[in-house]
Length: 338
Ligand SMILES: Cc1cc2nc3c(=O)[nH]c(=O)nc-3n(C[C@H](O)[C@H](O)[C@H](O)COP(=O)(O)OP(=O)(O)OC[C@H]3O[C@@H](n4cnc5c(N)ncnc54)[C@H](O)[C@@H]3O)c2cc1C
Image (cartoon, rainbow, N blue to C red; front, side):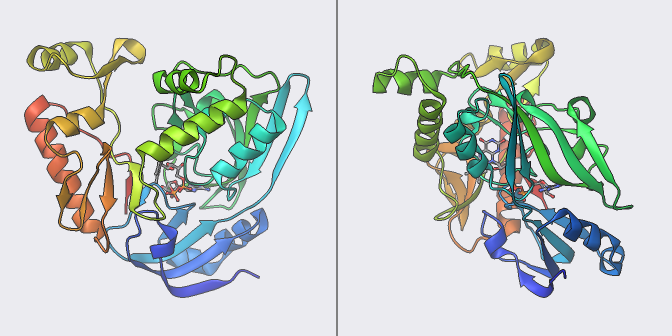
């Protein structure tokens, strides 16, 4: 029987640690719970918000409606020759899945170690870090349509993955709830060390022939050194996406700012380092009231204690305006604003 709570604080359920309330709150522990809630009268009368670990959201006000927190558990795997199909419930903590795979010698997601959040949210923005994106290992996911409660399987091509993007953030935004995700991993460890910081750390440790466990450890260490821990300082990781711009625009930016940090992107475009752009505007490590940017990474906005979501949001507006004025580049928020 589904337990629906009233007037629930969402502070423990968002890593920014913003203090807001929801009218109704229900935790979903199985596919059946999900079907029950989608068929219930409550959902027809309320706005709905699907929440995983709350590590990619900024609440700017109380949520007038029903929050469903997805906690569907379970990890299983099927070995098919050199390939392994691993399936995890949407509520599994992402890093618990990474640990399971590393311990069992299933290669493919070790570069994504220590990303906060749940398995169910991982396809939504095609999570990525240190040279790997979710799309590189995604096989399929099971989702339920909110309007009809019908089950649908999404394969790779259905998801239209892009940089921090998928169909679930566009045409199908707010239309489906993901219940489980399957990943195609490998039993032979083709480790990916192309990212400079990983190679540097491996060299420092004298590891010439890294295992996937080595990669997972090194990535975790780099992340701990660089990013604030949400359990001590509220944040949602990178607040903005790295802007991807046309080559002509890039030439203009480069002419005015020859040191601009950039990387090649698909279709001849250029990706700029948003953290560098923000830093150049004097924002790195700055404290503005109860919010600000992280001292080691200007791309991360933080809650220094009891900040409201509106404060964080208006600070992000200031950053967007200043970066636009200096570089002629419009930053886009990665974090979901609610
Ligand atoms: C310190 C820190 C570091 C981070 N580093 C990275 C990084 O390196 N790379 C990266 O890509 N991200 C990073 N993030 C962002 C975040 O971890 C990811 O976006 C993660 O996938 C969010 O998972 P979640 O369960 O917390 O999602 P939530 O924040 O709960 O939800 C995010 C969005 O997905 C939707 N959603 C959640 N679950 C489901 C579901 N089951 N079905 C349908 N919709 C759903 C929500 O409605 C919301 O729109 C970081 C965050 C923090 C705090």
